[in-house]
Length: 271
Image (cartoon, rainbow, N blue to C red; front, side, top):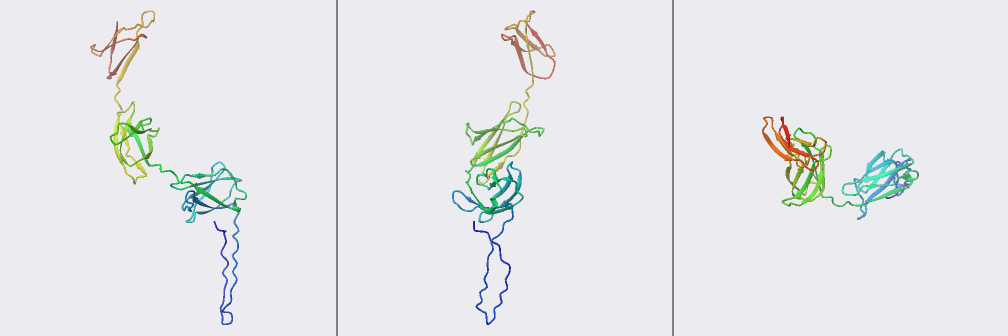
């Protein structure tokens, strides 16, 4: 970055017949920077070209914000503020890895230019973003979401919805996909989608899941009069009209289980 100077005060020059060759001497004075003024330049680390529109932020040593600005067309920036003894510099631009400095002593930084080189970021592909809700529009957390390519049976990637029902995929290539939403408490849902190359972030329409009708269960332990579990005991389940509807046997711990039962009253008979 070139040495900063300030414009001179206007000087009046009068040309007459006698002094038409008069040359007025003009002196450019150095610019006196105010205390706590940081100046610098940001460039591409690979090409060396200046970067315009970089957001440059000054924070204290604990990352509390102080001031920010943007680089000009030549990659130059200037920031003024009341700086503590130690500061950090953060610089960000789309397509580049965010730069962050270590804690720097602010004393003396206003006496020199700070040059920063930013590394281009690798192409992270397309980002898919969406949310899952139940039939009452409440967020559905813990839903496993599996991403498949076109007609492939092999998962391309998977994720889980958070407590707000939100999920995200990254590094996605353009093409046709399908999403499978699975949970123990909800009926599986399949969503097909097309990802275009001109969509850096694709927001997927909200997916609503229907709860499974798991119905009820009845289980227990069969023992003898001494409290010892009875193995292979016959257990019959009768409905409210005393009609047998399910039959099972206990295991070696005397445990039995009936499941997929509708709401109502039941009777248990064991032998």
